[in-house]
Amino acid sequence: MDYQHLVAEMRRLAIEAGARIMEIYESDDLEVKAKSDDSPVTAADEAADALISAGLRDAFADVYLVTEEQAASHAGGAATFLIVDPLDGTKEFIKRRGDFTVNIALVEDGVPVRGVVYAPARGRMFYTLADGTSVEETGALDPSAPGDLKPIRVGTPDNAALAVVASKSHRDAATDAYIGKYAVADSRSAGSSLKFCLVATGEADLYPRLGRTMEWDTAAGDAVLRGAGGQVVRFDDHGPLTYGKDGYENPFFIALAPGVDLKAP
Image (cartoon, rainbow, N blue to C red; front, side):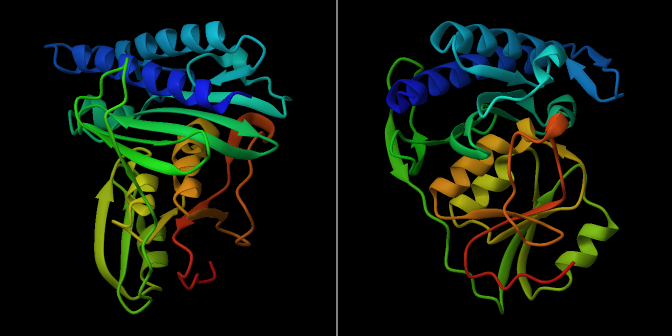
């Protein structure tokens, strides 16, 4: 894989998809439909998916593509694949709360090795460079030319005063009970894969997820966090979270900065 080319294409497609999403976000009518699993889908999900899928298939025709909005792509079986959530945080999008992202990642042998997370309503973009390290891009976010890049790195946790981030739309009593096992100095809620990025930048130390997620929800944020020195582990046994699982469904997991004293479930 030519990672330099991959990163450039993922970045460009994420920005272009973000622009299309924002056109719909700022319109008067957000038409919402229900998918077969009763989860919501909007015209923005579908438009971003079409744009990203066409771009990736054109640039990387020999790489298997998995995307949330195309059920036929979920057959699986490839060791190397691109995986896309064109609009992560659809509930945040519908409520016009801004915490939604475009997620694109490359998985190799069960590991998300490169990824981009773009939050168009927040004007924040995080991605891995060709060498696997993670950055946040600032400035105009021009799809044709990168702006200023700031290397990002996880913080050094203080286990007597941790910063925790949790889901905005899916936080529940079980999550609160688990967070209660830690000495927490700061707790915040965020939507979509932005939670991984907050750990990656050192704005949070710990993100536990005790709820259903799919690999397209997490792969890009996981890649960014890994590239910033962080890790994502299974909630049950603290083993590594892997990708390419049957059905692409994740177990519960914890994203963290090394040094956090993980508590048992």
